[in-house]
Image (cartoon, rainbow, N blue to C red; front, top):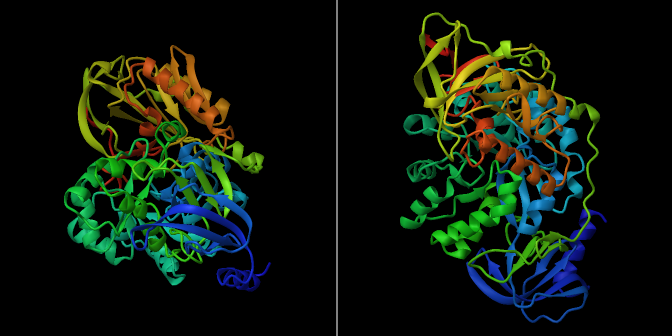
Length: 586
């Protein structure tokens, strides 16, 4: 059916001149425009809502009894990296759609850093068949730190413009401050390319304030998902930058932000929710965007305002209010039915007027994407498989080094110093002060780089843990108490073509294989969840007390998050964006 014919059909159905495809009777509709709740019916034609009038008796091909349940618009995740859920798009839909998330704004920068344009296109192929909507945020920084890291591929201006022209694209993906404040022509041209197409440019304004924040806003960056304090949130709103309130696995920002919003009675029109990075085990245990909604309500926000943040606000921000974000004529019939507004737990979920989930489970089949074999063979290491590769020579008995100290439940870190022992001419970790060896092994088969640094906060008493998910270069990242176990970790990851591993005494205690781009599994959510629990438990048996050790490990390498990152080329000052020596003095 052509677009014009479909539109005519919707108008005719709204006027009662033709039968509805679907009539959902007897619901309590949450109107996100008026903030009211109305007892009514919902009429659907061609996948879109055409009527919300109560008591209008009209024929319908299918009638559904809403049983007096609340009808909410489908929930929107305003910023997510599917790759860090460790699942394929189809399996993520299987997990989050029953929880009420019907739209995902996806920045696939992780797979792009590994496999470039072709890998990104292959990863997203078949997305239109999913029982949810995927809108694309075009990766703006592939690589994130040009000249400071080795990635598997790059996306230049030409590739970004090509993806901006995709029908599913709605924005330029998150752009960190260094590209703007250092006046990178390539990245500024990417912003202009998005704006010239009527699309927004997503921000990543971590740590900015004052004149730098104003310069960032002046460049056209429209939002930020990196606020960790209420003061940062208000600073961004004051300069016209909308805020995505994030609650992921290791980025726990919601309580601090929403406590301030509620306490100060702040206008919530320019606030949205996102997960950014959340592992399947945490989604299964807590929820997805409905968890953000429920937490905000628990903290004291009115249910309707919380629902608006998860629906209308995001739709308006991304300029798709005519399609999603409300149950109103002309919008897609993405509808949640639930029995309470105090705690949103969907009983039924409709997408495009089709019942897709009920009682916490999908009720439709999802076609799995057949990914190309080359996208499952991306781990190519030439160093790091032998203990000697991790040795750091030094003279004397003691040496002072720079250390990346993690901040629990956040992706920010501190750059500290520590004094470490030198034994047999090599710098050794110090388990007692929790200063462990940290290394990045280049795994894209480009140069065989290997860089060693130090970290604090993992608490390992023995053994080593490692992952091939290392933002944003996605080389192998390993932290350990000894070189032999670190090398064993690298060998295990090369064998499984990526994943998470824990090793002690050369023995593999736990492994979650992630062979798809070295970032994801093709297994269903429950299998990935079980594997993740096992490898987390294995890390815990080595002394690590972190709730999400592999998510924390994956972010410690990021060169755009203050105060430090690490790549295959060495330790990076994340504020100055330069390589700095690990050893201060010998």
